Image: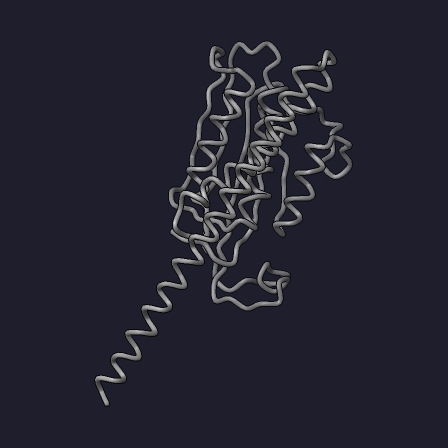
Length: 245
């Protein structure tokens, strides 16, 4: 009897492990296909841009390419990993490197300083909007903060802070779920460039990139703050239900 029970448990565990491997392979294939399809779209936009003489339209297409690339990188990371989460610190480094190459700042004296907490893991629902947000802010710094391209610094910081039971209109309460702890994050992207005019207001901007930032911060149930001290600084705070470390 005992041998039969042990056999049943062993057989069940083996079946569960097999199913888990099949599910992992299926997910990896999905992420691989999404990444490849996004790269095809990006290549088509690149070909289209080469045949256009209007510099403004070419810039619009390049911005679209960068947004697509920011999403494709996430699916590449998910394809590489055995888990369902993106190592976001690694992702930010790759995204920044790609954008520096896109805007050809390698020969300039614009430096990049990053303060990234290691092993921050986000699922795709958090990683995609956050990746696009970073893409938009970082691209704006590269395009507008240093008109003469002589020198400057862009800084990216992503850190977490743990809190106890959420209070008031908390992230977990808005989602209708209850958690013992909430993991809060602070993303800061700043530069010491020419700055943004005092007349500029985040809530009333008609710029597509900044409108995207507002919408995606709201999607993350987060908040955004703009500081104009010695350049431009965007501070985004948001919470996640679960985060690996």
